[in-house]
Image 1 (tube, rainbow, N blue to C red):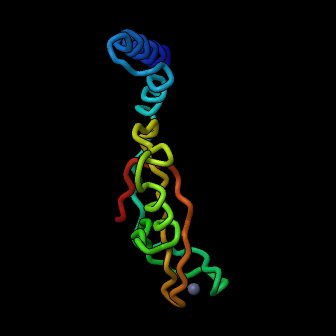
Image 2 (image 1 turned 30 degrees about the vertical axis):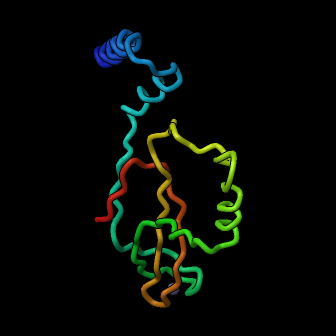
Length: 132
Ligand SMILES: [Zn+2]
């Protein structure tokens, strides 16, 4: 017990020493230090038995990872954006270039094997999600 505390404080001290060299902010440094202690990878089975809102009972569901669909070029918003970007003065809203977070919220897509009803399950922040 005592040894583990000593070891942990030592590694913390070491990390503090190393911080002087990197150009990261203190908040980022603390976060990356915390990250080293949390597991960000998760294995999810390809089939899950869970509640189906349509069948109103537990059924086997096939699991896939949700991905945003393709943007339609002729949708109203896209046409408006294209029009706004035209001419003098370029981008109309700031684009996210630097990301503070290193993880993404992964949404699971569940399809009922009996009725085919599809619903989503809100995910947690993960670096890597693997379907097994
Ligand atoms: Zn169902």
